Amino acid sequence: RTVCTGFGALLDGGANGLRYEWSPRTGLSSYTDPKPFAQPARTTTYTLTVYGPGGCTDVDSATVFVLTQTRLPEPLITPNGTQRFCEGTSVELKSNVENIADGSLTYQWLLNKLPLPNATSKDLTANMAGEYTLRVSSAFCNTSTSKPVLLVRNPQPNVNVLTFNTTCKGCKNGSIRAEGTGGTPPYQYAMTGTTFHSVQIFSGVGAGDYTV
Image (cartoon, rainbow, N blue to C red; front, side):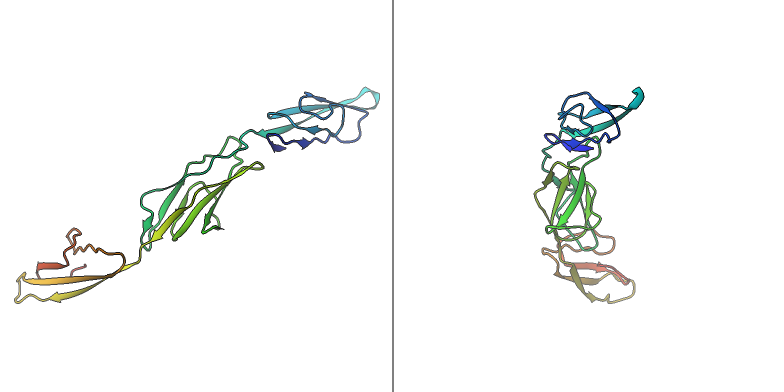
């Protein structure tokens, strides 16, 4: 039986004995009742001795586990990197709440206040835009919910190109002009084998296939 601090559980010693004796007596409503109410301050194992006819006895035990962490800390969500992401990518959301010794904490991630299916781990790989929160619950005691973290998916950019061919075989006097649309300006451009920069025109290009 698992309870929170300040709560208790009913112990059941059966009904076939002539006399009952629970030990220790701490936290019991009655140590001679076959079914006493146990409200210990900490996890306690109670041993029951049942006395039957002819002096026969039987011994059994029951443990009341007391969760002392009745006030759960508020979870903190930390994105692993930026809170903006592109189509086809994702953001790792890390929480700071570790499970306690008896493993009784459960996790539920919510997107826009609605539970996400199968999102029941302390961390989450998020690939949808919206407000993410994490709800952490103990087995019986308490529930705590994080502040929301907003993830924004950047619009997908598009690029249109205009080519200017070379004037002779083997010449490198062609050029490519790139024009970005959609997405989130300002745009950065790169051609095969080059680094990204804001210049839209790639000059000194020879004949061939290029990717912008």
